[in-house]
Length: 244
Image (cartoon, rainbow, N blue to C red; front, side, top):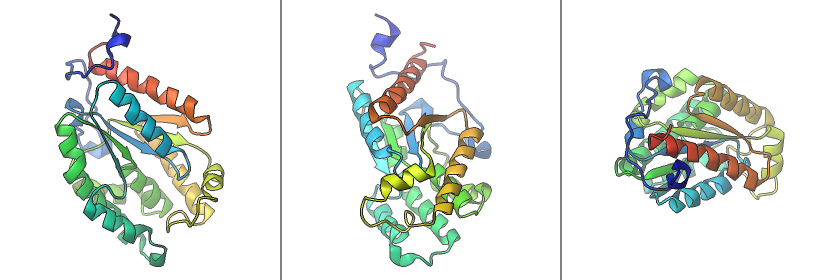
């Protein structure tokens, strides 16, 4: 039986797995010894929800246990914070307050769901994580990557994704896709210039953290996008089994 035929079996940590110890200015990611932490990033309208659902089905078909979460939200406390962040009645929210609220929601989600799930050997698929704060508040709100990262050091407690899929679509296409989806939230209703800065922020992050970023053309058909993502995950599973 070839390694390609066995990748969907649960795997043990292999000695051949290499750890990146320098992500985010020396904050060490230790989650690779257990479940896989996968995050999806991109502008609203990039197709994250569709692909996250397909990734869950793929991993479960491989016999893996999967937890799906979203940001902001994912716990009772975090969902309450989400309501404050996205409420259009809070248009006067200061950028720093916004960044701190996202970090608070993330702290609860990481402590209550993400870290325990990874430690239990489950894979976590997250719709947005700390990279969204870096892109939206760091670059979009112009607080700066370093400032936002510093805010989040305590909230993530050393827990960062092993793989980040960035679904890349131009801001104009993203805004076109979301324009007919009903009432926009406080972030979605921001001016086009803001969303263009966020897009640039994601591209800069993909270059800075190329070791874990996988940039996928989000303008393609959902099936083609899904095939690309699954091929990447197959290779990751093989690597973790010591097959490469």
